[in-house]
Image (cartoon, rainbow, N blue to C red):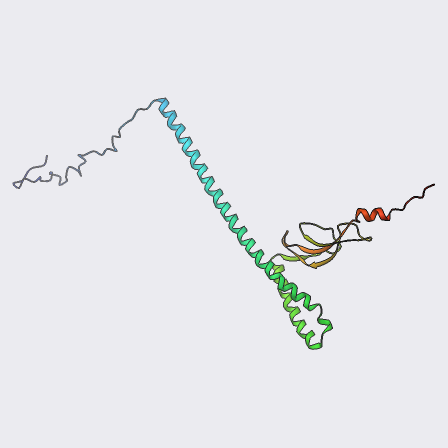
Amino acid sequence: MADINDDGQKEPDTNGKTPEQNGSFESAAVNPKQVNITDVELRNMQKELIEYKDKYLRLLADVENTRKRMQKERQELTKYAIENVIITFLHPLDNMENALKFAQDMSEEVRNWAFGFQMIMTQFKDVLAENGVYPFESIGTKFDPHCHEAIEMVESEEKPPGIILEEYVRGYKMGDRTIRPARVKVTKGAEPNKLLEEEPTSGTE
């Protein structure tokens, strides 16, 4: 037992250690308090644990689905923005291509200028092709409302209805998606009244 000196303070034990160092005070962790629960309480706790785990997994799945949906929406917005820029870019490209069709009828100086513009236009088309943008052929093919826009319909004795005879504006695709439909002239069937007029009339006996 520690001695008390004249000042009223404890003196250390003979071994030079305080009671705390000698382990006189036991920690609560050495003798934990035991709690008794019934089997019903244990089953309820296990059930709650399963429910919390299920809610946690569902929450993780919702967060992952939200992340994927937002990523897909950003990609689609970026894709549509690029498509709109390309569609706007196609109009001056059409004008340049149409103007160069008449270059051969011009003077030699104009043809030399046209040759340079032809090279620039080819480079533009190469850039479009590198990004998956390419024109598609329409003349002689079957009319497809997903790829074509009919701006004129004419009767034809040589072609069946729905065949494209002429292309006014070239159509373009980006991958498998049509970003600009081709504006075309399409054949149609004969009008009913005209068919009746062409039918031969039988004579009366």
